[in-house]
Image (tube, rainbow, N blue to C red; front, side):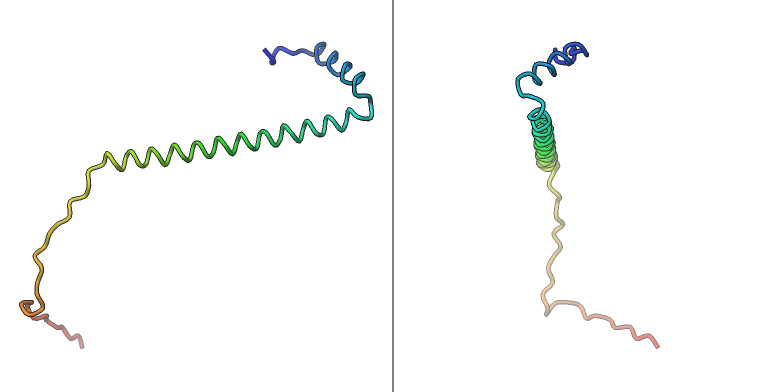
Length: 92
C-alpha cells in the first residue's frame, strides 16, 4: 500500500507540507522525523534481538529437559584402614 507512492504523490505531499509548515520549519521537522525513525529502528532491533535470545534460551532448556540424565557410576568406597598400600616409584 505505502510502497506504491510514486514521484508525483511525493511531490504533492512535500508541497502541502511546505505550505502548512513554511520553509523555515520544514528542515527542523525533517530532522526530527529522521531522528524518530532512527530511534524506532534501534528499539525494534533491540526487541528483535531480545526475543531471539529468549527463544534460544527456551530451546536450550527444552533440549536439556529431553536429554536423558547422565548415569553416575557407583564405585565401592574404600575406607582408609582397608585401603591397599600405595606403591612409590623413585626415579633416579
